[in-house]
Length: 594
Image (tube, rainbow, N blue to C red; front, side):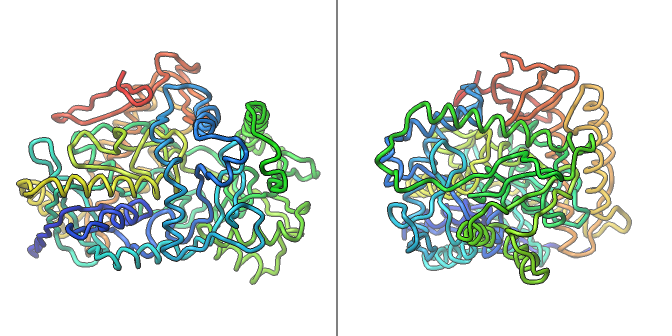
């Protein structure tokens, strides 16, 4: 039996996860030269997380754009409330929305200092920005050259002296007397145990993927990053912390344009604007296209609540149609197409540029344009992909206070690790939230003169688990158990749920937990640990789905066949935690427990 080496690391601030949130947290914390800041990342910070291959957009309150319109920060928060929470105050953390919206403009200027291009000579927008419609009744999302974002952030971290430890999967939090004191990680290239001691920790391990089957049939071709497997939520659960909105995770039937690329490139009212329209095979318009804002009118026409009313009416009408497209397909009413025929030459060029900066867009455009010789304006993209698609990963997460601190003192969270946004905060939640959490962690670390005593029980326990997986002679390959879990969740915890099916799903989950996993090398060990995180996520989703006794429309999008109507009692977030081996639940309305 090979003895696993334990590597001790002492740092003032530990950042877990190197996506956008983690990088921004580390950069801000390292602005104080008195502190040692360490970032642990399961993959490589240059290409990890949702922005690993680029991001083309980020929403914000933009003073030089919104002030001339007479549009205020309060108006933006109300837009968010009306569009994402249907006016239900119990489902809105306006404190978190305000935190992101009010600071994101400054974060964009920071990114510009780090080397990201935001200004364009052909722009008529104040500041030469490119700003389009997305989440709000006014243009409120920047478009920018986002492909090099992660390498630029990595370079800035190194410039500020951050110790970056790639290929380490953090698995356990260590707390002492109600305060965070460290964490445990496992090397994914060399099977070693990392024992981190820290004064403050920022948890930014990302969202959730691989809990449902991949609709394309291609391994790891998931909508979100396949390495984001709920590790943060799993370790928080075992640390006794509350996690909210777990029941929002689902694999709903969905139609996708672009087949196996699984993109949303050009979908109207999505992230690429101005967008195409959706038509059926006869040419009938199912969803109309969007257009640029007329910047010649800036300052001449003032925003009014009537603008919001019309915008909401259109948004809800179109949302209902898009939500029914999978059902329309099942009734044989397709095929449907993404059609750019109405785009001007400038709009087509703009959309192509935007696509190339988002996700796998560069690869998609290389195939679509360079290899196949297609033209966006002439070649319609069919909604040919069909199957379950993972939703809700940006909604679930840790319950935090207004300072992004969890119930464990000096443990902060940011990005997709934070729950209760109801609609994903996406890149702004990561960029602005990560920066803020990093600053809070730095302040706490500075105030603490000595390191808290970090017990070694978690280190010994994780070492024993890894040794058992690596030295087991017979067992299941990680992929076998993962597929079992995905089939279980698709069948027992799909788009429409019920008490009997959910309880049976929990029984079947016990079989998966009893399956002995086996790893022949450090890579397989990391995959086994990811599967264990997926198991924890699956159990939380099943149990929270049982606890919420109602159905609720999008954006929560939760349906129970035995409780088909919304309930005022359940107009709130549902939290789950593990205490002394038992699952317990709590309700939260707004930013307070009920």
